[in-house]
Amino acid sequence: MDPSTIGIFGFVAALTLLILRVPIGFTLVSVSSICALVTYAWRPGSEFNLDRGLRPAMALIESNAFEFIHSYSLSMVPLFIAAGHIAYHTRITTDIYDAVRVWMSRLPGGLAVASLIGCGGFSAITGSSVACASSMGRICVPEMLRYGYDKQLASASVAAGGTLGALIPPSVLFILYGTFTETSISRLFMAGVVPGLLSLAGFIITVLVWVKLRPEAAPVPEGEISGDDRFTAAIKAWPAAMLMIIIIGGIYGGIFTATEAAAVSLSFVLIYGTISGRLRWPDFVLSMRETAYQTGSLFFIAVGAKIFVSFVSLTGVTGGLVDIVSSSGLETWMILLCIVAIYLVMGMFLDPIGTMLLTLPFTVPLIEGMGFDLIWFGVIVVKLLEIGLITPPVGLNVFVINSVVGREIQVHTIFFGIMKFLVLDIVVLLALLAFPILSLGLPSLMF
Image 1 (cartoon, helix red, strand yellow):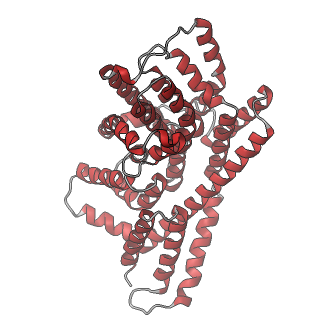
Image 2 (cartoon, rainbow, N blue to C red):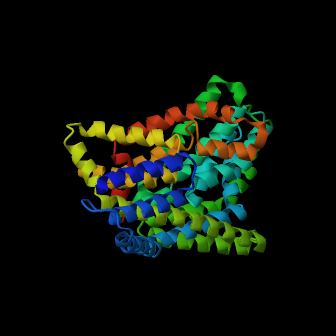
Image 3 (tube, rainbow, N blue to C red):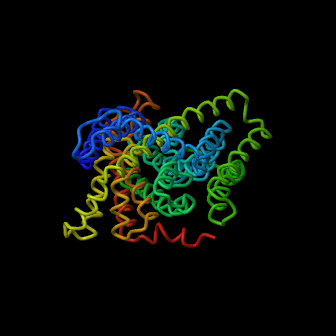
């Protein structure tokens, strides 16, 4: 059988299983392993021979799994995840929200703005969109509802703010993208800073316009906040500020690599939690258990994706795809818009990690062939995946917020509110497409 046919069949099979909600890791490992076996066993011009295909297929699976798991850059994944969990249990992440809430209390829509900035700060520590939406949703949404905020505004602002974890370093998506495309993860982290801040600014503008047009959606809390209260709240947020300096400042200044920044961040939260007395033994054990679970899940998915990439390369389908696109006569911008459209549609139905890992073997060769920068493309892909987190009908962050607040706010209510934030998300995406310097400016200045 023609290897390209097997490659196309494998992609369609993997996509179908993901749509049916089969776990990503199992889908990638099973499809790529079976299809690699068939590719070796059923060579063009010969009959199917299982014995001929079994040994090379097993060698492909074993070598890719071993080499990938032993990748030095992946060691930052459990370090950042552990730092995020411990920061949550030591209330470093909640101190960010508390500080901003006190300072923004008299601003119309101030609690929603504080929630967005708090999500940005949380993202700069954990790097996980879902964890950000889940943790901040438990804190911010009940607080806004208690002060009479509109349910759409209260829930949608946190769901949208949670997506910032995809762009603001240390993003897990950037780590996976950099590992698979062999691009600098440190530069990817820096490339995500300005787009992440632009997204945050767009969300804040959305809230301010919303409250301007509908003042009743965000009543201003009664009572005055003293200068001492503001000063105390700001001082309490110093550990969060220190973590951001370690991760963003340390990498930008060339003091740390991304992996070293992860190790220093974990050391800092452990020392702070121990000295301050905020880190209890049961919380530490829970943090380590959650870290092990999430790291194991991510590594299993990543190993499956690595095997899938090798299988696709074995079939030669990417080379054929590049040749077809090159001979099609389409303009570069038309091809790029087609890729963007594919990610937007897939993001509506699939998990972000599954979408990225399934498509990179096909899109990266196209992008390289057209001469685009892979760092810039990484930012575009992650931004598209971020949009998918709040796009109906799946919108993972929307369902996370719904699960956190329970029956008090229905899913359709959150989706109606999220549409306002999606408009600004699309505007930011168009700006990133039109002006690559927004993504590439900061990495070009790194030491």
